[in-house]
Length: 90
Image (tube, rainbow, N blue to C red; front, side):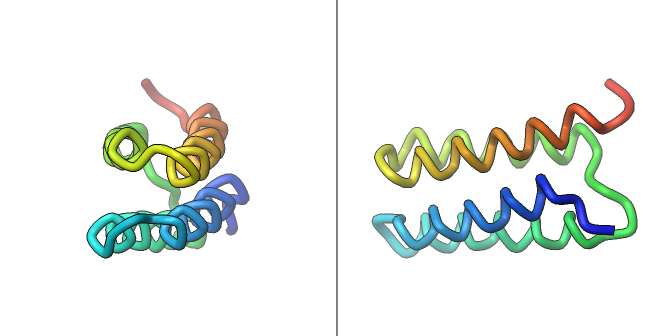
């Protein structure tokens, strides 16, 4: 079962990685993109805690990078938040 919002987040994070100013940031974003692609394809989606950790990491990256990277990360965060609204619990 594909979770479209998570798949969208993964694609947008790949775009952010392409715009990153250094290898470390690029690698962090690629890692996040890969994790969201995995979440999108998994039998069971991520829980609130997992999503919160991702959001924290991505917000930190956006704050450090700014510009196009921050814009792409914010777009990804919107997709993540849209998915999170469908997650039961907290």
